[in-house]
Length: 210
Length: 210
Image (cartoon, rainbow over all chains, first blue to last red; front, side, top):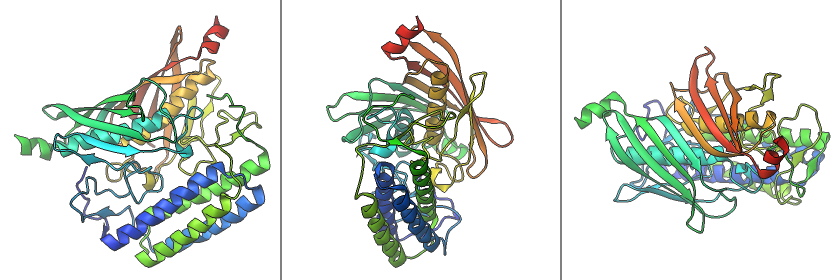
């Protein structure tokens, strides 16, 4: 998960900060767009301006999202990741950190863009956040892998607009199979969603562990 | 799922089209931002312009995303939905339609913003799309509900940048429990991800069906 494909552009600190700022502003624009009460004419005018900015950004472009190499605390170098990536305007982003006990943890708040049932988080969004956290729990324990199965159980609705916590931990390893489990909790500490997942390790990690 | 909370702003056709166009332009901007090769200075300059557009859209805003009321073919009135919503810049969006056999189907392509493992779709994104499609399959069969469990099985990596197909169908109903299953397939027709889900019907639908 934290390996870097050799062909990816590697970001330095200054470029990384500027692009993270740009992604944050686009996230705010997306949120404003989904609740705007502006009329059709103004929406169309703003859309034209947005298209002009897209043209500016597209004058020079990479074939794929960049990776970040610097920084000790970087859990995931995939800055374009749709859950954790600071450079991805679609990502909340959820900042995940790993404790010495191997528990991966993050706090995050989801706004209007992530709504499923009225006023609640979309069930698929919760599944997406958990897939990422469980995958990182497997990776920080030295056994990264591709998701093979993900099972998500919804205990109660997850509210929008309040601080949520995600936690995940590797539970066991059986040959190439790595199991992890985790939860999303509301501000009252009650679990809203639970998940378990199984990941399959690439050959090179299985060999390295034997 | 297709019920409309009374407090939501109801969109007419003209406003809906303009806001969908705006969301499409912001989607393109987000994609351009995650692969841009522009320098830090230009990224910061564009970010300032984006912030100015956000301020314009925020002059008048609703408390929550609007719903769309018109149009016979509207499967889901939640235009802000993060999977299907034309007004949500985070949504691909996946346009789902229901056949006379109750099968919900959609074709879609996922770009750089949805990347998990290098060049492949993030496993959590696939889970999110399937949650939505399975939920709609339950709803179009007259038995809508909230997701209680979602189990996703990854058969092979799902490629980015090529046409994908999602299909879902209700399998059975047991009291308030509604079961559905579905798949995502690649352009060669091979299934990449399978899912099954169980939804819990609200009381009013259980009563209506008895």
